[in-house]
Image (tube, rainbow, N blue to C red; front, side):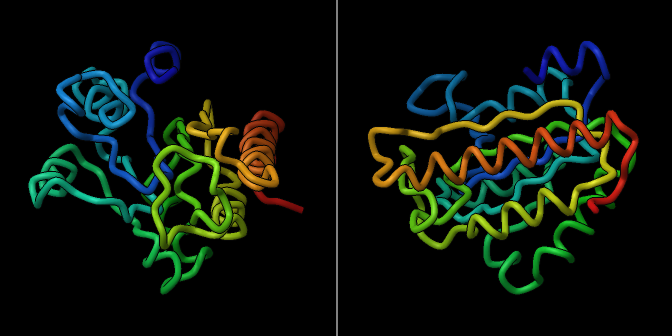
Length: 190
């Protein structure tokens, strides 16, 4: 998806909502896995390295090099604790400033949410965002040039009471609404 969007818009700003960085060089010895896509995107030049952000990070690191590599690639990090302490409005404002008027790609790994809100995922991590925080941050991106998005890692087999599916469907709705507002030329929610 990032390659296709970059062919149309050039390198795009990236907001990556996830518990994990997903910028490892390899994961279990493989260069193309769910733990490596954004390093590959930087290497391929499909993302604008002056406008890259992870949001909700809290997962394990292999070592300090993970953070050093991320910084060299151009990523800013907003942890789930940052969202708690600073609040969604301040976080959304910071993200909008970093994005500017660049075309934006948003990637949401559902494990950005705390397992209390999204248990149906393969790599849950305690201490995540609430579904309300995620939805409000997305709503706070109104006016950004959202050109594409993805939502990944919903695992229905682990999703008791369909809580994860509900959170994912509302997230997809907000992303679709942001794109529709952008196309319609609207910049703020009603």
